[in-house]
Amino acid sequence: MRRRRMNSTSLTALLAVCSLAVSSLAAAQATKLAHTSARLQFNGSRAYQYAQDIVNCGSRWIGSQGHVCAENFLKKQFAKDTLEEDTFAANTPAGMMTMHNFIVKFPGKKSGVIVLASHYETNYPLRDIHYVGANDGAATSGLLIELANDLRGRTLDGNSVWLVFFDGEEAIQQWSDADSLYGSRHLAAKWDRDGTLKRIKAFLLVDMIGDKSLDIVRDQNSTPWLLDLVDQAAKHEGDQSYFFATTNAIEDDHLPFVERGVPCADLIDYDYGPHTFLLPDGYHHTAQDTMDKISAHSLAVVGQTILETIHLLNQK
Image 1 (cartoon, rainbow, N blue to C red):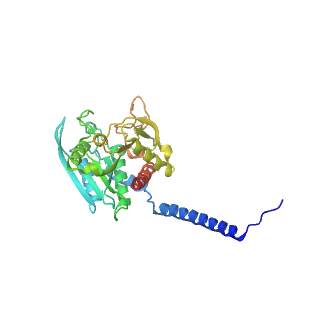
Image 2: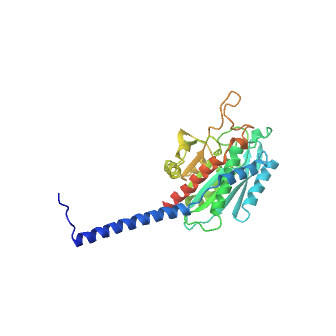
Image 3: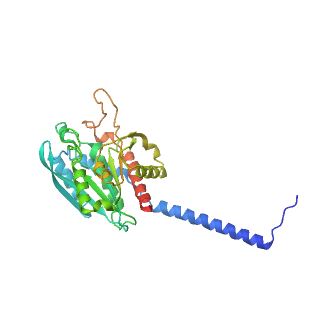
């Protein structure tokens, strides 16, 4: 068999194609490396410590000293940031109550806003059992505080990111449309009136995601495309096994925003702890919801996924 010899023109063309292919590959690799090196790494251990600091305030039911302690802790954490205290009066089954939302704003170069939210208070009906809500309120608040460490100190390249700490998520007497979600219902209505809602590109709520056995439900009340984006972000991080193996319809602080057309995703692990005769709902809303039941690893998984979700949102 005779091998065909290339003429000089063909050889030159081949070398040019090879050179172009190598250059394209190098450029793609450089872009990938640049993205990897520029990516922020969420510190789950610090988030866990912030959660511990909040738990150290004790029970944080509205009107308690523990609630005041948590308020002051948040104010101290964001003293050098753009912090807004949204104080309002709510009519509850226990009478009028003063509640406090906190909003921390980190500006971006784009005009849109990505909201990351949690609640920080504990259940009012459980005020006599020293219920500290390590997973339910403290863990997610600690996660947002740590996210702030990745956001502050510069103008963000994409959308602005606002952290919201809701008060009054829990029912004062018994969960109902009127007796729950006080802080989110108030803020959604306020932002609807002043036009802020039109700027919100995505609303990401975190709730009960410190569970050592992390299994975040796919919420049927959330916006499908935004949940898909979170799933994509989790896959990018290699953490997809922690997300969306089960589905459920969750009533949570995102609902007042969903009802007003804001794209929302509620990231929640509702199945918390073993279900027994004495603990039919696991550790949820019991004195067993303590720091030993949550983990820095779970906080890191969710925190890193949120950072990647922000990155993907900014590309849209």
